Length: 440
Image (cartoon, rainbow, N blue to C red; front, side):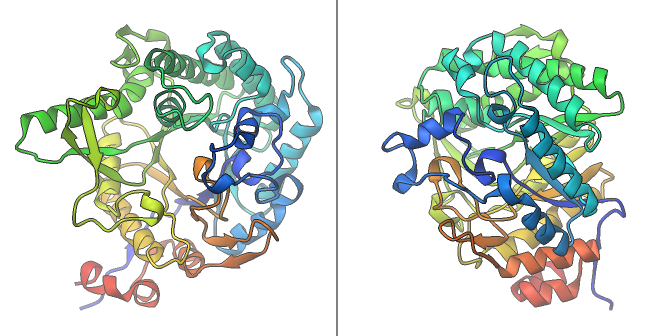
């Protein structure tokens, strides 16, 4: 009997994803740079520094992406470079981004441009950041300038990356700027982010009618620790509603849901041409009346779970299938805008990649319009509050010297991209232990 080959659509996009502050280096004019200088903010006192040096030479890594068979790349532009002072736009910075996008196109790589990926210009932070309702106007103005300058090379736009993560980490957990633990401030910031998305959506389409506009949503699964416990089911549902559903309801249904608010949000309705899925892991949730800050839930991993480096999460590929099926009910094209694993020695990543892509393939068999997959990430980068301690790259980076070394997973992903399929030879070559799982 012939062994199965898992083919992907002929026009499927295979890429990697990055963020400006994590790869460009020396983004000295944003709130994250200032945050890094404060003692105790970043694990082991790390700094982004030169990062991957993309501002000077992104093209060298674009060559590597092309060599590895990729035909797409998701990157962000840094607001604080483009608008270093309120109302002043730096044409030299826009020219550099034009050169980067042109370089991607010349290598046969389609760019997806993210317009906000966690960082804010210092001038906006000093005005109160996203708590300030004027941030919506400022963002729309900045977006218009970017689209006017870069639209020749890009028509696939991601307005905001993970608004739920931004709000949770910056305003509830307090481990991202502005470092608050203020529920009300966080919900104001969340509402303004979603309004900014909608304003940007309309402005982009006014400037570029054929544009495809969406945002990247981090979908984290919250499963009741004891499915037979009414309280565990209740609190898992409450966390899911607050973290996942509330940020989808406004742009799709025109409704504010708790905790973002209550009532109608008609001006936000219909402001997605596609939805991005950032999927990494899941939580088990048990009711705990002593934890109101986490909506009365205690979050943990399954006792028998395989864990990821640095306690990042649980190795749970079924979550990819579950998340894609859940988003499919929105009736929108889907991009997997991030999926990856911190794995410095690359002992888990080959299985992680194959199993998650296989789950994606299974959802495709139901005619769900999944347009592409962007692995996080191409080269090890500065991983926010975790600094350089989590290594997500297909390519290992020495941040001191800039030396790059391909991990085995880089070649695995290359072979999948080139074949546009997961073949028995790929499974045997990189994760033979999966043969009995995927090739019965």
